[in-house]
Length: 180
Ligand SMILES: Cc1cc2nc3c(=O)[nH]c(=O)nc-3n(C[C@H](O)[C@H](O)[C@H](O)COP(=O)(O)O)c2cc1C
Image: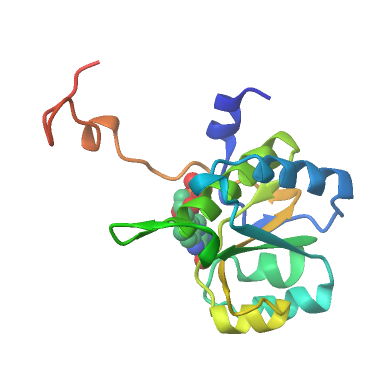
């Protein structure tokens, strides 16, 4: 699949079929994460693959029920991937904590590869970290950054609105309009 097609087709999918996802496809999306760029190539990320229905329910309990991804984690998606980052294995510069960026880049590569595999994902950031940590026994040195359901989409949402390029791209200087 062409990268631009994958970029255009990616959505936050919150409705999944219960069809299982093969180990091969799970490995394929993790391979995409594995080759992501990172601070000094430190690769601070870890991924926990959760398939046990009971553990998925426990993970879902770390989300507020109002979280639109709640049902996909608790019931429908056959796989939930929990993204963790070792804060000691990445850097910070001028107060910018790069572990979040490193982990996010790896997750984004995973999410794009999922499109090529015919699978949906949804970055889930609104959850109780302590509760998720406890469910997956994540050691204290690691932050639980995010999780995503992974599965065959039941419904693919329409594109959400985006700003126009002119609203955030400048030429040479701040707020100087660019013309293409
Ligand atoms: C940092 C971050 C946190 C997010 N947290 C959640 C979440 O907790 N629950 C959810 O349903 N979607 C969550 N999303 C998905 C966004 O709502 C979604 O990306 C945005 O509305 C744009 O829609 P699209 O991904 O379909 O283009 C999160 C996305 C990001 C990048």
